Each structure stands twice: as C-alpha cells, then as structure tokens.
Length: 246
Image 1: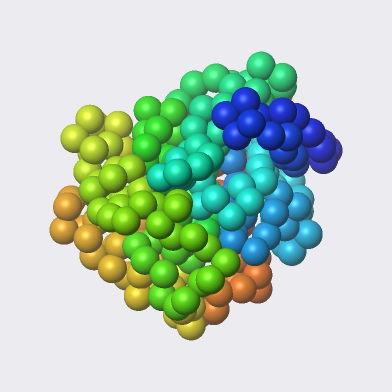
Image 2: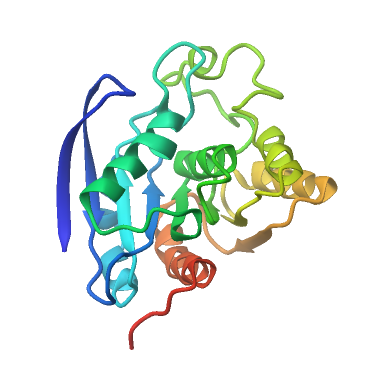
C-alpha cells in the first residue's frame, strides 16, 4: 500500500511531502526504513526508478521516502535543519501516526548518492536512534566536480572538517559512545564517486569503525541502485531481526 503524506514541517518551516510504502505482511507494530534520494531526485524516485515495491514485498517493514530537496540531509551552516527534520521530526510523525515501533532497534536508514551521504550523516549523528545505516554510491567527503547548483559554503560552512557535517567525526563520536549502528557501504566500479567511497572505507578502517564495504560492477545510475537495493533490504532485515514472508 502506497500512502502520500502532505504535512507541515515545523523544523523546515514549510510544507513537505513524504511517500510511505506500507507492508503487505506481518503484524504491527512494524520497524521502519527511511530511504533517501539523491541530489537531482525527490521522494518519488525510489518507486519510479526501481522495483522497490517488488523487492520489499514480504518484509514486515514500513519504507518511508521523504523529500530532501538539495539539502544533503544536514543542518545547514546558514539555513534549514534537514538532519533534525529527518532524524527527529519525521520519525516522530511516523510513529505517532502509524503502527511503527518507537525504538532504536526498529529504525534503519539508507540512501543513494546525496542520500548515501545523508543516511550516514543522520544515522551517525543520531546513532542512538538507528540500528542500521546503508549507503549506495554516497558523496562522502568532497565534491569531485564543479556543482554550481549547490552552494557548498551555505550548506557546509567554510571548513566542515570536524563538524557535524564530517562523517568521520560523527563515526568517531558514535564509536566512543558505544552507540555505533551497523554500517554498510557500496559503490560501483565505474562510479565517479568511487575514490571518495574507497577513502572513507580506508579511514573507517584506520579508526577501527566496524562496517561492511562492497564494490560491484556499475556506474552512478539507477541500473546499479536497482541491483543493490535487494541486498540492502535483506541486510537491514537481519539487523532489525525481521524475516521475509515466503
């Protein structure tokens, strides 16, 4: 069952839209997976560009697809607080409106490209609220090519290293608090963001931050993400301790 939510975000001070894929199996209350889109997409894209409804069939899992605009799912240096919106405000709405379990071990988050960074940004910053986090082809550390449509200083500030925009700083903090969620990263071998993902993987290894990292054939496109989302769903299901109906 696909539900369209049109609602007023107090955190963003604007109306927004969220799509919700309600499970066709299992008994409530259900765990939730927040699935984030990339820079040029919106809340509709996961269902329009992949067979997500087919891949999710049988899982007792609510899939929540918010609209993140071009905000990188972080609290802007000067501007809207997208991390608080996704990490706090949206789960509160879902859990008071639908039969969704309100607990860390019942929440997961993932995404692709900008949403891959966003999933790690939110999942690590609110590590006590998410059990598992996955990223497909995430834009992790820095832009690899000019992006005039993004005001980097407005979003990240002049020096994001060590701030809440910095995934390594967030990972270290979560590890030190013993609240690190399960992490899964993957990237295509022909992806222009491959070096960023390899760099993040190497740095996480150096810091002793437990995670899975995978590389597969493919580029920065929906053919690749369609191939990878079934494995991500199965991995989240294992971390959330749910089984797919057969």
